[in-house]
Length: 175
Image 1 (cartoon, rainbow, N blue to C red):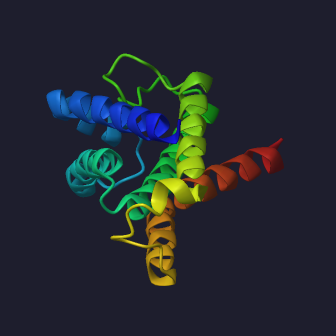
Image 2: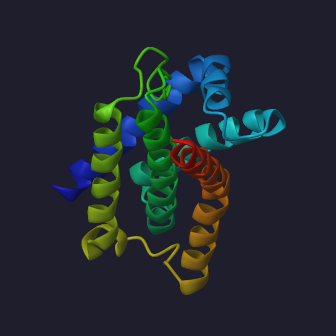
């Protein structure tokens, strides 16, 4: 059953990667529309996301460095969740461009991310999945590096949330 879950997650990630590769300019425009990154960082970040998803999918299929890929995937998906929750909260009509460019960010998008995070956590916490291939164990340094990655991914989001809060507080004081 867990191997099926692992394969399903791999297929979802490969499907998302294929759509991003087929319409890379649309995906980069979607990243730019989030207004989290400086324009110079949009292309490097977008391509990093595409190849990260591909690498995680391949790790799910082959089992090579699976534990690292699971940790990385969870961090990446949590960052996506924060960014999309901000867009959803603002009720902006943007597409996440996860599987093409037509679906707008909605509660369904957030739910799908939560399900993927949960699936990755199930795989990560099950010794049967991660122990058969110990090529990359989750040492404390790897875990610290992944937490640093999440923190670095979330800095732009935290800045935007801070601006939103400041604007909201100004509006409240003026009322």
